[in-house]
Image (tube, rainbow, N blue to C red; front, side):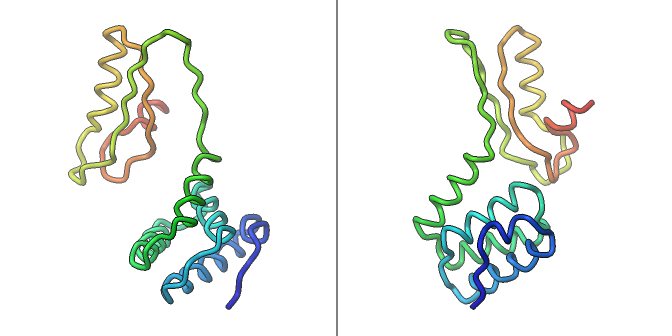
Length: 145
C-alpha cells in the first residue's frame, strides 16, 4: 500500500491526483485513513484542486466505510484552518443568514435575497455562503456583480 506524506500531496497537481487515487483505493477497501491522509485530501479539496466527481466518490466511500472519530476530527481541524475569522463590533446585534445550498430547481437563492432585504431595513447582516450548484443566483454572484 502506498502512503504519501502531506507535503508531497499538496504541492503538485500530479501528486494530488495520485494521492486522491491512493485514498479512494484505500476507502474502497474499507480501510481507515490516517490523520495525514485525511488532512491532505481535505486540504486539497478546500483549495479547490479536486474534481467534483472525485469529491463525491470520496465522500460516498468514506460514508460507506463509516467515518472514524480521527477522520472527523481531522476534517474539522482542516476546515477550521481554512475558515475566515469575522470580527464584529461588541454589542452590535448581527443577523447571521446562511443558505443550505441549491434546491435543484434553478431558482433564486432566497437566503441571499433575505440578507439584502434585512440590510436594506437597517439590520447588520453577516451573510456567508459559497458558489451554488443549482440555484440561479447565490451570494458569490451578488457580491461579484
